[in-house]
Amino acid sequence: MREHRLGDDIDDFCVRCKRIMNHSVVSVIESQPAKVRCRTCHSDHDFRHEQAPPPKVDLRKQALFNDVLKSVDPTAPAAAAAAGDPPPALAAAKSGARAKARK
Image (cartoon, rainbow, N blue to C red; front, side, top):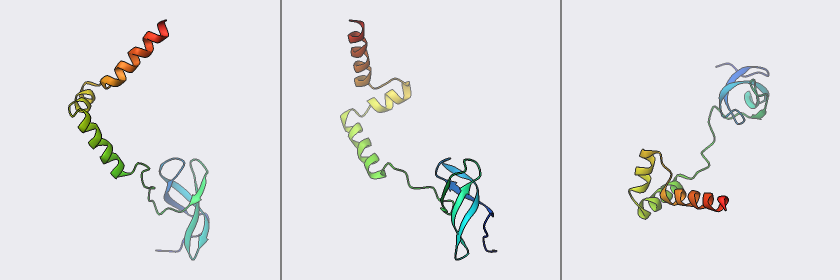
């Protein structure tokens, strides 16, 4: 593979567009791109080697949250998701807010 030079077009993950887009090499250190500029939104950022940043939601926290939801009422999340209705507590809160708004 040839060395990267300033102005070369490469693919990289854009932190602003949140997808892999075309970039121009802006800075090179030891023949490797250091900084790139997105050709779509024109933002500069470090070269990420086409790797998206890790998700902000910790997978362990998400698993614990799902376990808590199942322990509260194991059928409610599945039934509400299937029917497309909000959970009963949320529906009751909304109806209570509507009644207060009418007064």
